[in-house]
Image (cartoon, rainbow, N blue to C red; front, side):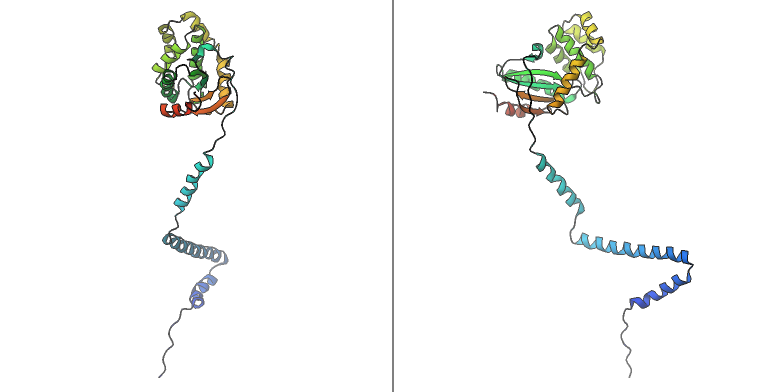
Length: 262
């Protein structure tokens, strides 16, 4: 009795029909057919590899997230700003309170975070009476708040008549922020705080302090200010001790101050 041998897979033999078909095609068509077949094989192999990797637990999203979460660890230590602010040359009308420590705030009158930070600083003056002063300078973010430079100029015009803080407090109280304050309100507030309307209007319309505002913005940037509010704690000689970026909650601001207040 003759027993047939078991059938075995023979890849070369199975490819003969394909090869035969390709040889019967015109050369150009055979070339494109070959490209299609090769692409199909590569796709199939890649698909199989991807499925195997997924079953083994390889997670590309997790790998990417891991890289991102490690980034803050590298940037937690920041270079402290260095520099000195000439407090002697600072306009006394824009310094509030008394003390050996001064917080110099660089602010934008149309910034909603500055509006939020304003009452926080008012609270600091109450709680650190005789220990901490508050000095105010301008850092209008013109790309976001086109009205801020004119409003900054208006506060300095009010300062000419000794009403800087009264005017600034009222401005932050009334502005909705984000360019929401009507221009006419600048003059209404001047009346409300008791300014000479004619002198004030002349000062505002002639942009009398536009260069001062620009210079203060440059000073803030030189100290590391990139947004508002940006503040720095300085000692009695004007040496910068620490930065205060953003509208810090009162508790966090208090913690920063207590490192320097005796």
